[in-house]
Amino acid sequence: MQICYVCIAIVLLTSCNAEQQKDVVKPPRSFEVIEVALQDVQGFYNFPAEISGINNNQVKPKISGFIQSLFVDEGAHVKAGQKLFKLETNIQTQNATAANAQINSATASIEAAKASVSAAEVEVNKLKPLVEKNIVSGVQLETAKANLLMARSQLSQAEANHQVAQANYQGVNENIKFSTVTSPIDGIVGKINYREGSLVSPVDPLPLTTVSDVSEIYAYFSLNEKQYLYFFQNFPGADLDEKIANMPPIELELANGTLFEEKGKLETATGQIDPNTGTILFRVRFNNKSRLLSNGSTGKIKVPRVYKQVIAMPEVATYEQQGFVYAYKLNGDTVKSTIVTVLDKIDHKILVEKGLEAGDRIVAKGIGSLQNGEVIAPKAVTMESILKN
Image 1: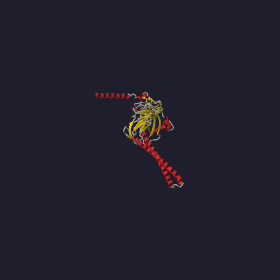
Image 2 (image 1 turned 30 degrees about the vertical axis):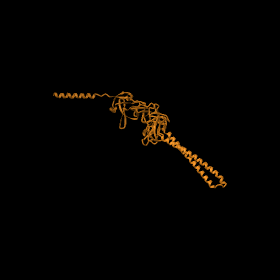
Image 3 (image 1 turned 60 degrees about the horizontal axis):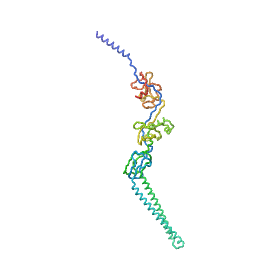
Image 4 (image 1 turned 45 degrees about the horizontal axis):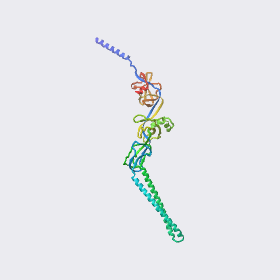
């Protein structure tokens, strides 16, 4: 009997505890909440860029020969016309001597031919009156006239040979001048591919060196077809030229992550898609007063993109499901899962095209554990504080 009373008491106590647990309500969880507002947002499109001096000249010899002297070193600043290389000219000097001898020989031949012409003319003039008086035969006069024509022909040939000899001599002298290789422009000497003693010629695959004008530089970057269409459809201007002219100054991020001291100007684009790469090439010009950038450098072009008065929210305040982007909007203290249409993403911020309005409150972070319709304890914070974390 006592055992029965004990069992009844245990059942009663258990029932009371269960009823008490039903009466306990968990407090709502606390979440950080921000109020979205209209704001101006600026970001950048980043594109890998190849850097080149505005003028890069390959220096090649105009004649073949051995390098006798080298007047500059790599990295030297040179002026247009400054000596860079001197080629051995022994062969050219010998050729010049031979060509000069040909001129002298041709000159002597001219003098001899002139003498022959003069003698033939005298003979003809002497025979004419004698033939008229029938003192000598007309055959002698005709023979003398034929000799005169031959002498004149020999003179013409001698004069032609003289012109050829002079042309050869001038050509050899030009080759001697070409043995001194000079810089075609003001600039900086690049890698020197051949040194003293090397045999070089105009058909060598590598130039002697390259001289680059880097007082200004070009930065080349490419847009794929999709990016180009976005650029054409969304940047101000009636045509490509106007859009390029309306582009704001462009920044260049260097290989070490710092920004180049000068801002550049977008100048031109190829205007057609390269069938091999599927891209369109754009060119930006930068001043390079400090000579920090050199031919062959790399970097990132930062093309600005500006949005005026758009709703922005932290990217961590969203989640994706089945191709849609959602945020938790508050109705009082109750959260509601809401689809938002993304305009763009910039610096960990999502720019909203549809789904939210200025003044709406959203859960800013920690949304992974939230349930649609859940009541929370909102804690108001700023978007800046969320973006810093």
